Image (cartoon, rainbow, N blue to C red; front, top):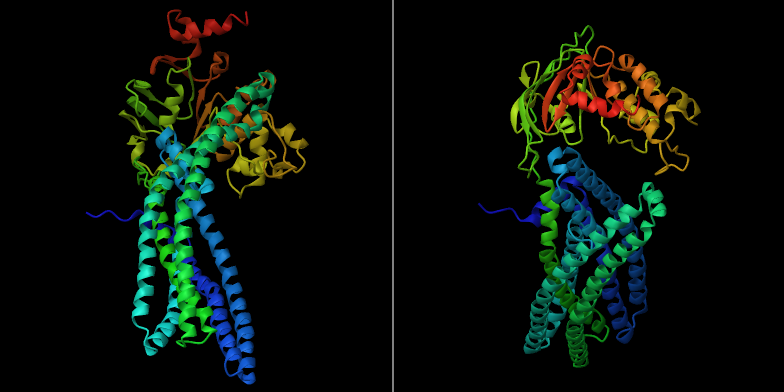
Amino acid sequence: MRKDNPNRRALKLLHSFCPSYFPLLVLKSFFEKLTPFFNLYLSAEIVNEIVGARDQERLITLVLITVIGNFAIAVVGGILNRAFVCRETVLYQREKAYFNKTTLTLDYEDLEKPDVRQLRRKINESAKINSHGSRLLLMSVGRLVNIAINAVLALFLGAEMFSLMILSGFRWQILLLAGLIVFLVFFHVWYCFKEKAKNAALSRQVSQTMIDENRIDDAMDCYNMGKDVRLYRQDKLIMKIKTFAFDLHKKAFKLQASKQFLYSIPLLIAESVLQGVVYAFVCFYAILGAFGIGSIIKYVGFVETVIGCITSFFAVTADIKYNTPFVQDYLAYFDIPVKMYQGTIPVEKRYFCEGGDNEYEIEFQNVSFRYPGSDSYALKNVSIKFRIGEKLAIVGMNGSGKTTFIKLLCRLYDPTEGVILLNGINIQKYNSLEYLSILSVVFQDYKLFSFSLAANVAASSEYDETAVVEALEKAGFGERLKTMPNGIETVLYKDFEQSGTEISGGEGQKIAIARAIYKNAPFVILDEPTAALDPIAEYEVYSKFNEIVGDRTAIYISHRLSSCRFCDRIAVFDNGQIVQLGTHETLVADETGKYYQLWSAQAQYYT
């Protein structure tokens, strides 16, 4: 089966973002190109009248037509250009939104893959640095439209010139002129495609060096690294790497610029020679009386335009051909399939509806998991059932599988072996968005955005102000809220608002906890929720834990074993397996167990 042309696919996609873009492009281009031809034709007629009959009335008429015509073309062209610029902005914004939506809806597994991140960076950098990919494709279409309009308008003048020459008996001379044009076109096409192939390879090299250089810039732009840079004099290391990357980029860019300059010289010479021949040709036959002296202006313009159109056409097609790999990268990102089965079964609204019984029960049955590309299991034969309304603590050393366990519970990954059940049904069969709606999670690497405090808590631009304040107070953020200049409308950070408020790591963690409270889901998962809090703030969270969680099922991950004592059960992970399960009292009483080992290692600092 024939594969669809990538450029055609990309244009269909871009057209879907803004259907009126391409029609407006054609209309705008027509009026832009109409002005020089309109003036060229009337200028020739005015000169012919001055050299010939000098009819004053006709001269005035021609001048008035020129002035009024230019004004009308300028007005219509200006209106069309304004409309086109607006639609162009809409297209670019919708394209960016589509790109971001693709990123946000990728399987989490793909989002973590280095090659997917590299592909996303390559697309962005290629567009910014060399305008390759969709940008160059759109520019090439615009150039092709201009070429087509120029050719149609020029042929109007050409038909007039050739008819006059034929009537005057100059037939073989037309063939001579056509032969010169064909020779130039053949030379231009051969040379252009040969050199464009080399230039495309150099462009990709420049793009890659710029990606490497900009990666360093991205790191330097992060103000959070400013402290380490100054304390450890990392500026020397950064600048050394930056200089090395810049030198590679400069070398590649210099080579590309040199090649482009050398490539342009033979074309400029050939075009200049033909231009001189055309001038001599037209002037000679004007003297012989084939047409008026003033017509030299429009007929020379015709021949130059035709030559320019033909050579430009092949230059653009060469650009399109060697831009195709960038377009393929562009489409490849959108073609990344969503492999995780999304499910269709709705989740019972036991918690959200009035009088709900909160009867949600999750069970892991012999669950094992390996990360993509890994031969070793991160989890192996994990079986556990969450009791409704239970507070379960998960402990273990780094790399024991705790975070992987949570990722599977949140269905960021699917198990390699075994199943996870919600009320006896495989969670893969549930509608994925509905399943996620029953989970409130505070990850250790939580993310807050430079939006208002309320929008961060509600994770939405629309929110219940009373519920936002209550969630913040339950999370221990009440006193800090009183000092914020605009209350819950205060913007966090200064990325977009100079009046934004910077918050500490501990304050950010409280906001993340408030976000989980506000969601009011039946399952609450807290991954090291107090890691950035001071001891007093940590004690406040612990003392309010039952108030925060209420009658919901809570899963609590922590390295601080003393904070797990308020939980009903504790699951101890080691090497991807649950090696112990029980209450604090029963686990600490087993001196041969992993929990006792971990407890003793921490308790020695407090005894």
